[in-house]
Image (cartoon, rainbow, N blue to C red; front, side, top):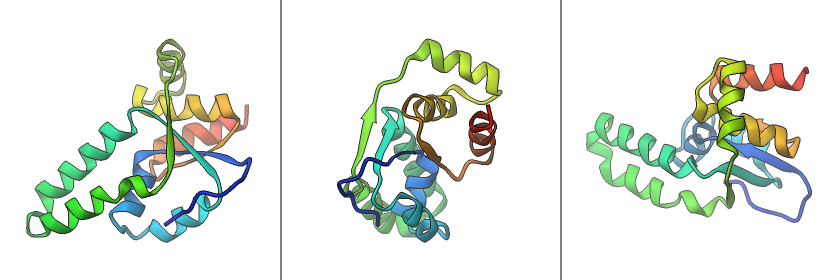
Length: 134
């Protein structure tokens, strides 16, 4: 699990990356290494997305309810500052990039902070890579 340290490196983490760590998915170690030592930021919607991911896991992994809820309860051990976004800018970015407004909020933060975006979402990563090339 990533730990916070005194660093100036900022990274934007999305729900797919956080869920990989929290729920012990195959990509957890690689994501943890990418986040290690950075100051982590995410839009406030991160908590709603994590609750939704947990709910989906509970519905699909009914025999593992206790383990899923225990993992979910540990999510706040990873220190991530929730940051408000400019919804007008996010909407415009979503239109330009052809992604959801949810995903655009992470991309918007990465632009604002000139920070790496850490995600497992292919369309969001593609938008980020296109954005970096601008």
